[in-house]
Every structure is written in C-alpha cells, then in structure tokens.
Length: 274
Ligand code: NAD
Image (cartoon, rainbow, N blue to C red; front, side, top):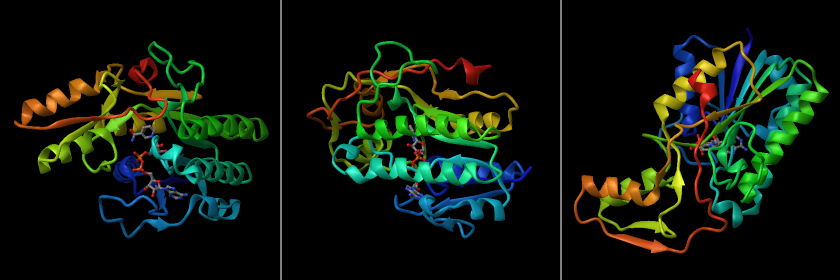
C-alpha cells in the first residue's frame, strides 16, 4: 500500500490520529499550515503547507494512495462573521479532490460534521437529509456534493465522510465547549452559556474517536458516510452542573444564543458499533 496523507495533522484530532497511525506501522505524511495555533508543539516531521497548494505531482511523487482530510476552519459561530473561513473549507477540499482524481489516490476520508444535518428533532443517521444552518455547515455540505462529483469523474476514487459529532479531550482548543468551561472553572472566571443551556450535544472522548477511526481506515468495507458519535446527548446545562459538582463557587452567566443554534444533535451509530 502507498502512503497516507493526513491534512490538519497538527490539529486536535489530526495530531492524535497521526501518532496512532505511526504506531500502527502506517507510512504517513503529516501536513498542516498551522493557521489554527496548536496546543502541542508541532512535530519536526510536520510538513507546513496549505492544502490548497497540494497538486497531483505532489501526490504522485509521494506515492499517496489514501488521504485523511481533516484540515478546516471549524468554528461554527465564527463562520457567520468571517466569510473567508467557509470559502477556504470549500476551496481547499475542491483542490485536494481535483488533485486526487489526477493521481493514484483510491481512498479519501473527508472530515464531515453533524452540522450538515442541522436540526431534525430526531436521532441522525447516515441517510438523514442535509439541512445546514450555518456557513460552516454549508461548506461541509458543499464538500459532500464535491466528493460525489469527483467519485463520478474517477472510478477508483472512493470517498468516505467521517461525520464527527462532538469529540472532546485533552489538547482540544479552548474555543470548544468542554475545554472552555473547564478552563473558566479552573481559573475562577464565570462560565458563559449561550442561550438557556437546553441545547444538547453528543460527546465522544478522543481515545474512542481515534479507535473508531483506526478501525475504519483498516476496514475493507466501504461506506459513503459514517457517523462518529456516542448515541447519547447531554444538555449544556447538565454539562455545567457536572463541572459545578467538581468545583464550588462557579459563577454562571448567560448571553444570547448563537445564530441559528441547533437544539439537539444525537448520532445513530450502528455502523461504528458493528
Ligand atoms: P482543529 O481546528 O484542531 O484542526 C484543524 C487543523 O486544520 C488545524 O491544525 C489548522 O491549522 C489546519 N488547517 C486549517 N486550514 C488549513 C489549510 N488551508 N491548509 C492546511 N491546514 C489547515 O480541528 P479538529 O477538532 O481536529 O477537527 C478536525 C476536522 O473534523 C475538521 O475538519 C472539523 O471541521 C471536523 N469536525 C471536528 C469536530 C470535533 O468535535 N473536533 C466535530 C465536527 C467536525
């Protein structure tokens, strides 16, 4: 087998996945442009480069047969205020799929998100309708359609979308809800809840996400979409009460809810369980 290219390899999921791929004897190239400042010092092996600058020559010269495309600007709220983020998510994925279609890439794992489904008032399965509620989600949905287009164009190219719900754990950036609340609680600052806190999310610990990803990458079975979630949801209010049970005198403030806040995300996860 050729090499695996991991984009977004300095990020929260990319760094831990890359380390685990290496310890499982996969030959990989780790790439990231460091546009999101990582919590861990980047490794010397990291190729500091923009995904947009990868072309087919690069993929052929490096014998890349599989790509795990995790690079993205992932902040949902910011995507309403910085229009370039969603454009970049689409642009880099388009260029990478195009380069893949002109090279020997056979497997393309695309980091997707439960945000592609928007609010549907029920458990989300891999066939749920696509209903984006944010520019970020639109960029992820656009990447899904692009993937279908490139699979029609190139027979040997098979794309699987890794539909992440919320993965959490050490080294996650503090713009994500759990590290944000925990760092506020430990520094004695108030925890800030957007809206009433009744919005619910499906959280998966990073070690479980990595184990699932390794199984998916090693598997011979093909799926177009795979949900990566626990199948359980917890409200933000309940999350705060858990943190409050661990530390006394935590102040909690409320601000307006974010634009188009989704009430609940919960994954139907039978593919990863079987
Ligand atoms: P992250 O922000 O920690 O990592 C993303 C990495 O991509 C960063 O290191 C950043 O520097 C890099 N990057 C951004 N633009 C780039 C470009 N143009 N070229 C090269 N590198 C670039 O994110 P993460 O939590 O590791 O998430 C990985 C993927 O999974 C993302 O696509 C994200 O949208 C998706 N996702 C994550 C979650 C989650 O809970 N973490 C949930 C849903 C979807």
